[in-house]
Image 1 (cartoon, rainbow, N blue to C red):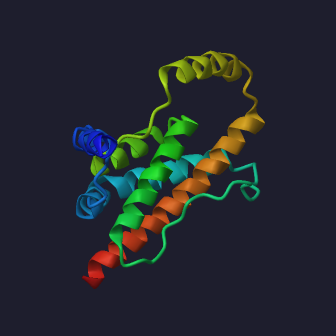
Image 2 (cartoon, rainbow, N blue to C red):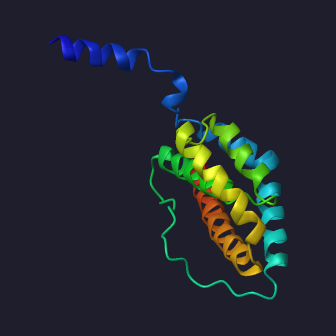
Length: 164
Protein backbone atom coordinates (compact mmCIF):
# COMPACT_ATOMS: atom_id res chain seq x y z
CA UNK A 1 0.00 0.00 0.00
CA UNK A 2 2.73 2.56 0.81
CA UNK A 3 4.39 1.78 -2.53
CA UNK A 4 1.15 2.55 -4.35
CA UNK A 5 0.79 5.87 -2.51
CA UNK A 6 4.36 6.85 -3.32
CA UNK A 7 3.81 5.98 -6.99
CA UNK A 8 0.65 8.06 -7.15
CA UNK A 9 2.37 11.02 -5.49
CA UNK A 10 5.25 10.78 -7.92
CA UNK A 11 2.82 10.90 -10.84
CA UNK A 12 1.05 13.92 -9.39
CA UNK A 13 4.25 15.90 -9.04
CA UNK A 14 5.77 15.10 -12.43
CA UNK A 15 6.58 18.29 -14.30
CA UNK A 16 4.17 19.08 -17.11
CA UNK A 17 7.01 19.00 -19.64
CA UNK A 18 7.33 15.26 -19.18
CA UNK A 19 3.76 14.63 -20.25
CA UNK A 20 3.07 16.46 -23.49
CA UNK A 21 -0.43 17.49 -24.38
CA UNK A 22 -1.32 15.91 -27.69
CA UNK A 23 -4.56 17.87 -28.07
CA UNK A 24 -2.86 20.73 -29.90
CA UNK A 25 -4.28 19.84 -33.32
CA UNK A 26 -6.02 23.20 -33.82
CA UNK A 27 -2.91 25.21 -32.89
CA UNK A 28 -0.81 23.00 -35.14
CA UNK A 29 -3.24 23.48 -38.04
CA UNK A 30 -3.27 27.26 -37.66
CA UNK A 31 0.51 27.52 -37.38
CA UNK A 32 0.88 25.30 -40.42
CA UNK A 33 -1.40 27.55 -42.46
CA UNK A 34 0.48 30.64 -41.27
CA UNK A 35 4.13 29.54 -41.26
CA UNK A 36 4.64 25.78 -41.44
CA UNK A 37 3.57 25.24 -45.04
CA UNK A 38 6.07 27.83 -46.26
CA UNK A 39 8.87 26.33 -44.14
CA UNK A 40 8.01 22.81 -45.31
CA UNK A 41 7.90 23.83 -48.98
CA UNK A 42 11.17 25.79 -48.71
CA UNK A 43 12.94 22.90 -46.97
CA UNK A 44 11.77 20.48 -49.67
CA UNK A 45 12.88 22.84 -52.43
CA UNK A 46 16.33 23.42 -50.87
CA UNK A 47 16.96 19.73 -50.24
CA UNK A 48 15.74 18.76 -53.73
CA UNK A 49 18.16 21.30 -55.20
CA UNK A 50 20.99 19.79 -53.14
CA UNK A 51 20.08 16.29 -54.31
CA UNK A 52 19.74 17.15 -58.00
CA UNK A 53 22.59 14.80 -59.02
CA UNK A 54 21.90 12.08 -56.43
CA UNK A 55 19.13 9.49 -56.41
CA UNK A 56 17.71 8.47 -53.06
CA UNK A 57 17.21 4.78 -52.44
CA UNK A 58 14.57 3.45 -50.08
CA UNK A 59 15.33 3.88 -46.40
CA UNK A 60 16.32 0.91 -44.28
CA UNK A 61 14.45 2.14 -41.22
CA UNK A 62 10.73 2.70 -41.52
CA UNK A 63 9.61 6.19 -40.54
CA UNK A 64 6.41 6.77 -38.59
CA UNK A 65 3.52 7.78 -40.80
CA UNK A 66 0.13 9.27 -40.05
CA UNK A 67 -2.96 7.20 -40.54
CA UNK A 68 -6.37 8.48 -41.52
CA UNK A 69 -7.57 7.87 -38.00
CA UNK A 70 -10.41 9.92 -36.52
CA UNK A 71 -8.12 10.53 -33.54
CA UNK A 72 -6.16 13.77 -34.14
CA UNK A 73 -3.69 12.91 -31.37
CA UNK A 74 -2.13 10.28 -33.64
CA UNK A 75 -1.21 12.89 -36.26
CA UNK A 76 0.07 15.33 -33.64
CA UNK A 77 2.26 12.70 -31.96
CA UNK A 78 3.60 11.48 -35.30
CA UNK A 79 4.45 15.04 -36.33
CA UNK A 80 6.35 15.53 -33.08
CA UNK A 81 8.32 12.30 -33.63
CA UNK A 82 9.14 13.36 -37.21
CA UNK A 83 10.16 16.85 -36.06
CA UNK A 84 12.53 15.32 -33.50
CA UNK A 85 14.01 12.99 -36.12
CA UNK A 86 14.57 15.81 -38.58
CA UNK A 87 16.08 18.01 -35.86
CA UNK A 88 18.55 15.22 -35.03
CA UNK A 89 19.75 15.27 -38.65
CA UNK A 90 20.99 18.82 -37.93
CA UNK A 91 20.48 20.18 -41.44
CA UNK A 92 20.24 23.98 -41.72
CA UNK A 93 17.30 23.68 -44.14
CA UNK A 94 15.10 21.90 -41.58
CA UNK A 95 16.05 23.21 -38.13
CA UNK A 96 13.55 26.09 -38.11
CA UNK A 97 10.75 23.78 -39.29
CA UNK A 98 11.45 21.31 -36.47
CA UNK A 99 11.47 24.09 -33.86
CA UNK A 100 8.22 25.54 -35.25
CA UNK A 101 6.44 22.19 -35.00
CA UNK A 102 7.72 21.61 -31.47
CA UNK A 103 6.63 25.11 -30.50
CA UNK A 104 3.16 24.55 -31.93
CA UNK A 105 2.73 21.31 -30.00
CA UNK A 106 4.44 22.84 -26.96
CA UNK A 107 6.46 19.71 -26.39
CA UNK A 108 10.26 19.38 -26.67
CA UNK A 109 12.09 16.38 -28.04
CA UNK A 110 13.31 13.91 -25.46
CA UNK A 111 16.94 14.53 -24.54
CA UNK A 112 19.74 12.16 -23.72
CA UNK A 113 21.24 11.92 -20.27
CA UNK A 114 24.13 14.37 -19.66
CA UNK A 115 26.72 11.56 -19.54
CA UNK A 116 25.61 10.08 -22.85
CA UNK A 117 25.32 13.51 -24.47
CA UNK A 118 28.94 14.34 -23.57
CA UNK A 119 30.16 11.14 -25.24
CA UNK A 120 28.01 11.78 -28.31
CA UNK A 121 29.29 15.35 -28.67
CA UNK A 122 32.91 14.21 -28.55
CA UNK A 123 32.29 11.73 -31.34
CA UNK A 124 30.33 14.27 -33.34
CA UNK A 125 33.28 16.69 -33.48
CA UNK A 126 35.40 14.01 -35.13
CA UNK A 127 32.68 12.95 -37.52
CA UNK A 128 31.81 16.40 -38.84
CA UNK A 129 35.35 16.94 -40.06
CA UNK A 130 35.26 13.72 -42.04
CA UNK A 131 31.69 13.76 -43.29
CA UNK A 132 31.78 12.97 -46.97
CA UNK A 133 29.40 14.26 -49.56
CA UNK A 134 27.86 10.79 -49.77
CA UNK A 135 26.97 10.79 -46.08
CA UNK A 136 25.53 14.27 -46.36
CA UNK A 137 23.41 13.14 -49.30
CA UNK A 138 22.10 10.21 -47.25
CA UNK A 139 21.12 12.68 -44.54
CA UNK A 140 19.34 14.79 -47.12
CA UNK A 141 17.54 11.72 -48.49
CA UNK A 142 16.38 10.86 -45.00
CA UNK A 143 15.23 14.46 -44.52
CA UNK A 144 13.24 14.30 -47.78
CA UNK A 145 11.48 11.13 -46.63
CA UNK A 146 10.65 12.77 -43.29
CA UNK A 147 9.37 15.90 -45.05
CA UNK A 148 7.11 13.78 -47.26
CA UNK A 149 5.67 12.06 -44.19
CA UNK A 150 5.17 15.46 -42.53
CA UNK A 151 3.27 16.69 -45.58
CA UNK A 152 1.06 13.61 -45.43
CA UNK A 153 0.40 14.18 -41.71
CA UNK A 154 -0.57 17.81 -42.29
CA UNK A 155 -2.90 16.81 -45.13
CA UNK A 156 -4.61 14.24 -42.90
CA UNK A 157 -4.82 16.73 -40.04
CA UNK A 158 -6.41 19.34 -42.30
CA UNK A 159 -8.88 16.83 -43.75
CA UNK A 160 -9.89 15.80 -40.22
CA UNK A 161 -10.66 19.43 -39.40
CA UNK A 162 -12.94 19.68 -42.44
CA UNK A 163 -14.86 16.56 -41.40
CA UNK A 164 -15.74 17.96 -37.97
